[in-house]
Length: 264
Image (cartoon, rainbow, N blue to C red; front, side):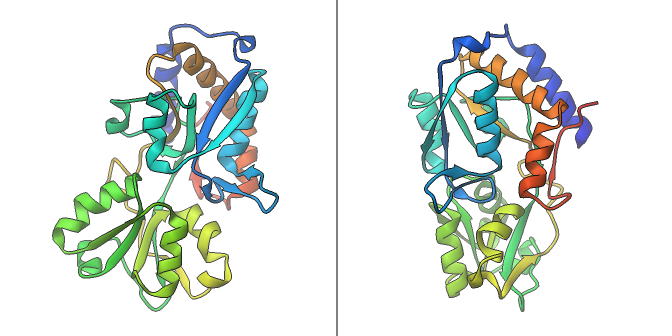
């Protein structure tokens, strides 16, 4: 997978028309759905924090631009980009083929595994045989929802969509759903490390034979915004090569939770 990520980065970089100078960008408006720790969340101080927030702030710093963060629901990020409400969508968004039809993406930043979470006495697997008849929580607009509705729902699995995983975890703890399906780091930081998640755990294998669940995470950019895309692409690549994104990942994740593109 590292080779694939590296190839994608090279294609995206050399596909850019021309690189804009940092001074061209006085302000960059970045939208995120700040209910997805440790990627993006609101700290007790009210400040936005997280892995993607650090990446976004560093991009703005290197481009000598002011970062203006906008907290949006995840399923409104693409429409908001298209409507020019903000310049970038940086919210653990998978660069799927379907999304590439309507927006552009930066070079790949990382890949993260999706896992089920269930009560410790329910050793579930991400298969129809294991989940048939159960209620599985997902977030609206995510690749996990797309996968679950395509692969599980037609075969007897009840897929319940929520506006955020915060709502999903509340219902999971209360027993209103049997499991949730999300990216593993969000399950750990957003639920399992909290008192209400004490009786729950990651369960089952990682799904490795699905393209949609193994595409890279990237930053969404409005189609036609070539100068900003070129600048963001070059900045992300530099941050991968100088170890900045690796350093950010060590701040938020345990080893081997996410995979970065090879810089060699």
